[in-house]
Amino acid sequence: MNKRLLILAYVVSDWLTGAASWTILFVYRKVRLESAVETTPWDLLDDFRYLLGLFVIPLFWIFIHALAGMYLRPLKRHRILEIGQVTWTSLLGGLVLFFGLLLDDAISSYQQYYASLSVLILSHLSLTIIGRLWITTRTVKRIHSGQWNFPTLVIGGNERAVRMVEEIRSLRKDPGYRFEGFIQVNGADTQLVGIMPNLGKIKDIEQVIASHQIEEVIIAIGSSDHEVLEQILNALEGLNTEIRIIPDIYDILSGSVRMSSIYGAPLIEIDRQIIPQWQLSIKRLMDWVVSIIALVLLFPVFLVIGLLVSTTSKGPVFYLQERIGRHGSPFKIIKFRTMFLNAESSGPQLSRNDDPRITPVGRFLRKSRLDEFPQFINVIQGDMALVGPRPERAHFIEQIMERAPHYRHLQKVRPGITSWGQVKYGYAENVDEMVQRLRFDLIYIENMSIALDIKILFYTVLTVLRGSGK
Image (tube, rainbow, N blue to C red; front, top):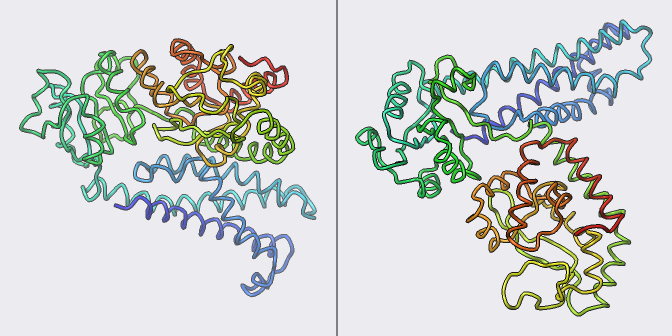
């Protein structure tokens, strides 16, 4: 089971169907609209527009499918999902190509425009569905036959867990779970002993998932046990696993259970996708474009700030400091230096308004947030985003986690140059203020959208222009 080969199969299929639909459209326009009845394959190969489109158009379709997240989780795709996503991407991509390539053609009537658009969309839609359904159907069959499966961990060993395991194992079509063992939640949680190995307790979750290469986690404690559930979800945060919960009767009656397969056991899938994939793709694209433009336009400002920093105090222009980023990965954040050398010789310290370690130029840079500008480089490198929770140092994260374990939820996303917490609260001078600012960043994560990012960027620009940062 090689996920990369499966993704490659989808890409090759999309490339071929994109090229085929372009060929169909081109031949249709030659024969039907230009009355070139005797068009041969050699005529097409002599047409530069056709050859250019044969290279560019399939790339365009692959780009559209990538924006829609159609190359993610290749083993979790199913036929209904393929039909729905291909329909939407074909309609959207067809309209973009129509207005970008076909609308300025010298065609005598609107009927011919509509006919060209219909041929483009229908040919791409039908061919792409055929290609993708073939790959997806083969994948589903291999999972149902037990040929491919997913290492699975059960959390909880009570009677509920036993019933779930027995139900899954009795299914006519294998859903693909390969049970590696279970995690004991409390002293009485041992009814799975004899059915599968006991791999430890909640504190061992991270180590168990790493050592057994777990891909699926099924929580068998009931979604109403909020305190224990929060503890488990905090432990699972940042780990690359699918999470499901056995529903209780309240979940079923309230409509929380969503079945993705008629033959599967009823499980609630915890969707850790914060916003739709197409918005995540646009957000990342926006990060790149804005950062590149900012670095080019602000280069003279960088030179002036660099000159001021280097001539007013000893030390380098830039200051690199290790911060913790997405999924707990460390990276070096880049800032203009705003403090005197050896400012933290006695250990990590947070800055404050009257901090004597801050240089006169550094005080201005902090209030105007100009010290953060070099982080556009971090954004291009992929360590950060334009908007996201501010990254902290491991030293302070440990202190925050003691008081607010849900801090780990901030690590779902890339940290940002600016954030809702930064706009609302400014720099934190102590751990108490970090915890207070945490509320705003959690609200941001639960409401992430392109529109909200633009709003936060707007207020950040106002802060820079007014020099009113804390």
